[in-house]
Image (cartoon, rainbow, N blue to C red; front, side):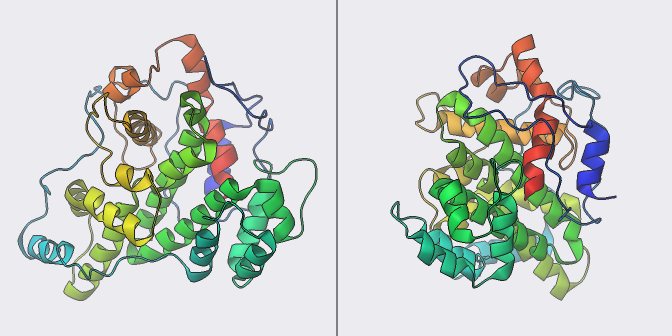
Length: 353
């Protein structure tokens, strides 16, 4: 069964999206139903567990611990540990690169006065990317009263920031799933976590005076270090034999995904505050940190992904977590109403990619 079909069976068709509580300003009400669209994720994606409306209630003994942080590489020893130490300290380490056409387009989009005609000419060089942009632009999540047939019209409708988000998301999807190799499900899992995190932060970030597209990119890209590690470990096991287990992958990620993510952010020339968050987003930030809320929001996304089974399930004591308390999210009706709608938001918005 496809991911979209499974989500629809688990969560049904939402009748309405509850607005964010308190001070959240919404630009426009989302459509009542998830968009009708072909599934692009295929049938090999990891299955989701059934999630009840109160998904934030831990199933099992609740734990009060931060998301995965820099650890000691538990489970990584011997030749692999020595290989990784040498590799990660190599200044010429071969890192994943964005596909050529999306990369050129993203460079052009740094200019607030970008020429959409020239941008369309670049994107058309990659038919798959052009088709992705048009499909997302015409989806229920992004479309308005009429459909667009041309890229330039789509860019005008969406705006520079949204076009940047769509191009980055579609490029990351292609790169992540391709990198998975024989462990494709790990690559798909990383992609699902990335896009779900982007959707979550795009929605909740507005409460904290963040631009929706900026918050979306923050969620989407904060764990790109894991993408680089997946490729490195896949290549290692391909040459040395053996299999890449989840325990090994998570052990290496605990130690290396933040510093390696920072290197990747630099190689991709991502702009502030993305490199700062990618390189350091675990642990309790200090309230004097200018990126205090950014780090808390990323931790919120990690916790939510874990409790919705996008990856290994963790029974967090949700409302007692430092990141949840720091964000002012409370065990109260006004927040529970919104949290109840999170699976429908994911089905509606993440599915368009």
